[in-house]
Image 1 (cartoon, rainbow, N blue to C red):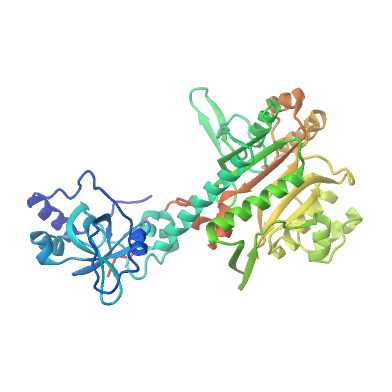
Image 2 (cartoon, rainbow, N blue to C red):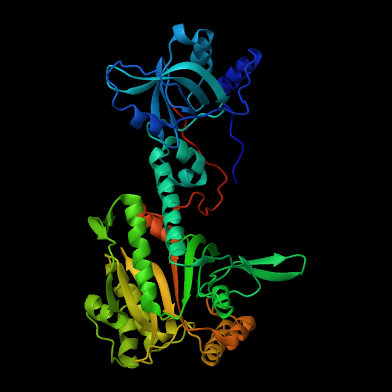
Length: 497
């Protein structure tokens, strides 16, 4: 658990001195007219030592000292020039009472220094918030990544690049939302708190509702609720929501994560492939100006290209191409030997499908570098998908990959209620036998299907993983403002020098 930090005595003393001077160090408002980036761009054409008549006002944290110093806001930094003959008594107040980390507001006019730096000549200055704790080293930022994630507010103050990642993430989500809305999809909300979980093979978080004295579950997927809406007559729906899966936490998994799911009546999984390609392409261009992204993967720089269409390869062909193993007509005995040779285990009961899935995950996934759709998976991988019309061992499912990481999951949705009931009954048996990831029976969902679920395509993709890829960072914790972290008793936050 976090503990109370020691307030810096010098800062506290200066706070009291300001109050004795009749200055409120925590005023109510400030009329901000500009951001740092606006000023740097607007006045970049000024000649050295040229002044303007424009009056500007802005606010943010002090990041330097002396007559020339810097302040920064969410858009960037700008230099200030404070002169005693302009500010009079205010100059001494600022020189002696303002510290790095304080939030101030200034008004003045713009000029460019002899060195070519766009600068605000400060005419009035106001203290807006007196900081009482020392910031981490101003030149080295936060070195301990655990502290970065636990105290994101500090990370954002001292590392402007981090702020830009989250500005890009916000831009990405706006692009995604606009894309689906313009395609005619209706944005909806589904329950986070559920009496029955389903829609994914995952272990749920369990909570308790006191009013009913019963256990409930945090959503692992909105899928079954979105399909109910198709039954009700909506033809195109999507949601951007939080899901919770009680599983591993690593560079590509956070127990609480954001995803988009979209469903469209009267189409199949090929339409979903096209939607995913298009939304990735548009988001990449909006964030980076092109469809290209440079990343480091397994120690080498690669240039990813998200221009649609992406390559498509069947599940069986991918194993043959990347692992040099042809499983298309391989016997279960031969597959069992391969699993032993590679020291692999199946998920669930051994079969051709579960064995092939185990081989794919270990021998193929990390070789999928450029964006690609892997289509036509074994039927054992999900109970919610239509069978493949040419091969009863397979289903019309695709997963998209990039840099060895799964980006999306999509189906031609199963809409035969009799087959669906049978498959969910099999899942319920696995659950009773001890499986952590099997589906429980959801009679209300089955009842909805029995009223009539139209043929449909469904798509789900992780917002966080998309942000990892398109912003160029390495970990899911770098794109979640407040990632799930194990509490610690004591942390040492490096102080400014």
